[in-house]
Each structure stands twice: as C-alpha cells, then as structure tokens.
Image (tube, rainbow, N blue to C red; front, top):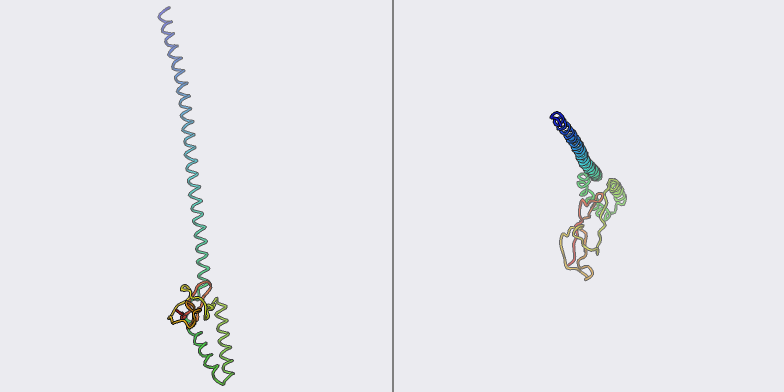
Length: 187
C-alpha cells in the first residue's frame, strides 16, 4: 500500500467516525431537545394546574363573601328599626298601665278609645317584626331567655325553679331578643 492510500484510509476512517459521532450527537441533541420539550410541557402543565387551583379557591372565597354579605344585609334590613322599636317599648308598657287604671274607672268610652289606640300601636309594631315573648307563671326558667330580677321562696313545690311572676314583658325582633322578660323565680 502506498502512503496516499493509507492517508486516504485514515481520512476516510476519520470522516466516517466524525459522521457517526455527529449522528450520535444529533441523536443525543434530539433526545435532549425532546426531554427539554417534555419537561417544559410538564412545567407548563403544573403551572396551569396551580393557576386553576388558585382560581377555584379565589372563586370559592368570593362566593362565600357574597353569601356572607347578603346574609348580613338581610339581617340589617330585618333589624334596621331596632333602635326606634326599642325606644318605643316603654311607651307600650305605659299603655298597659294606663289601660289597667282606666279599666278601674267608670268611663267605658275612654277605655275603648285608649284600647283602640293601643291595639293600633301594637299592630304597627307587629307588622315591623316585633313579637312578644310568651312567658307565664309556672314556665321553666331559662337563663338565656329570661332575666331573673329576684328569687323568692316558692309557694308550692311545683313552682321551685319556675317563674312565679312576670315583672316586665320581653320582646323579640325577628329571631333576636331585644328585651328579655324580667321575672321572679321560685327557689
């Protein structure tokens, strides 16, 4: 063999190795590019999932906020006139006392007139949501509803721990008690 042919052989071998290496490098680079594309796709999917989760939580929080403010607004409308109604309760008490005193007198026409005004007044307040708490003698005392003014010895064993007398009527506006009934409890 001649020197040229050996050199040519070596050049051909190097060219072939270079071609094989470049093919391997291209394959490796293609694999790396695919891996990068796949990992970039995974990263994007994770980010999308995080953003969806964040959106759903924010949406749920907003819905809860809307429900809460709606409920608060309804409660406000129900008890909007509470201050005015509470200030009128002593007037109702005065009407009751006046009716008791006028009933003792001989003038039945005056009694009817004051009674009509009292009924109209009570109906107006009832239409605004005011309800009287029904409390009577012998009812069981409940500290969450009743206000115990005093305790006296029970005249009967059956009245022990029960209401003996109602000193002041109680009222509620909607579901809220605005004035607890003042009672005397037997012990």
